[in-house]
Image 1 (cartoon, rainbow, N blue to C red):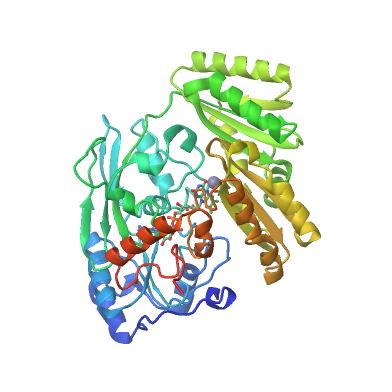
Image 2: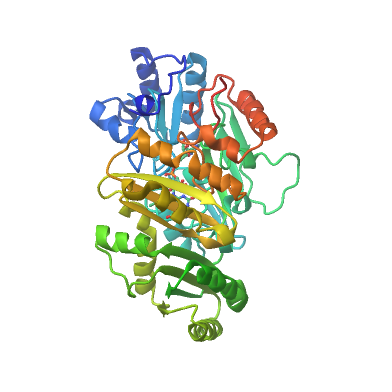
Length: 476
Ligand code: FAD
Ligand code: S2G
Ligand code: ZN
């Protein structure tokens, strides 16, 4: 259990009693109150199997009203809760630490409205991202974010972690694309900020409090989000690159040569790709290179885009920045290449234990941390590799070890966060703080900011029942 592994003391929340379970059943009906040990187990374990909680109760509300009644009751009874979406989070934020009651939004998956002129989609928080993308594509729109977890993650979880993903470079982050939301506070109050206007400067912009708050300030129950137009022309290049400096040069060239049609620029080192090919038995469309770049364009004119892309490709093959590669606009071929990139995360789960880090660093030092960690860990790690969203200065580092030991942890932490902080980076670029990083948040947040965060938490959740042990460090 996480509590033992990370020696965290249980706070003095109430324990769930039979009367509590009957109350929940009176609101949700028996089938939406899970108490069977085997049934609740998967809701206690996070995607990378780093954390395991001890919850005995999982609730599956279908309406905002039910969420409101559950929270009002838990708040009065001092019962801690863990809001949960698709449980694809990577920082231990989505599973309980002790016996917090899991409130899973999966049944709140209705699409409410879609305005095809403005592109404003209003839906419930439990909608799975991929389902939303498929739905809006039918209306010549796309979701403004795309990530490898799209098949399971929910829009409510995406909002709560301020998820970035593969196309942030082009479509921005959720603080820009979320138009409004509805959320329920710890005491059950429903906060209706569900507006679909692009502009609404009437008082404080409260939706931003909930975006990225990781279930600690309220439960997001509905989202209004701006969906960009489905691009008429899409192409994807997958290139072999000699060294990291050339990745940066290629990135600069892509920005100037492709300009407004550039929609994604991802990098991966050799081990990230070769391990994914090997562990998950996936095809690599090109051969072995020290580094790889994925360059995607979304445009409105095949001919125009094609011309731009081939000029870019010829120029950079000439210059040697691109050693070799493939470019395609065939949807199936693009999917195969994206699938290779999106599966890197899962490749580290095959055998042993993986430490995942998600940091943002100014691009020129983006990759420095990988050789440092390789050197520091030596043969204690079976794999150390880096990949991620170059355009966001966001690198993901995976460190695979035969098994979790405190010795390995002490080699990595706080070293990696100190190095990132020296490089004026952030210790968590897109995955959030969750359960695994509160004790490091000070590397990226000043005391004055942390003080205001505590004030907000105290105001919004005075009994601390929302996702305890997460995001904010314990005040000793
Ligand atoms: P969960 O994991 O269930 O929860 C995440 C956090 O949000 C928890 O703290 C939880 O308490 C809270 N929460 C969930 N739903 C709600 C709600 N309705 N109201 C309030 N709080 C809530 N992340 C990126 O940013 N970019 C990536 O490119 C990316 N790629 C990934 C690839 C893979 C293969 C995997 C497994 C994960 C990836 N992630 C990525 C991480 C993860 O998918 C995102 O953090 C995602 O947004 C989590 O959504 P979820 O619905 O699974 O939320
Ligand atoms: C990505 C996924 C998770 C990881 O693939 O962009 O956000 O760090 C990551 O392995
Ligand atoms: Zn990512």
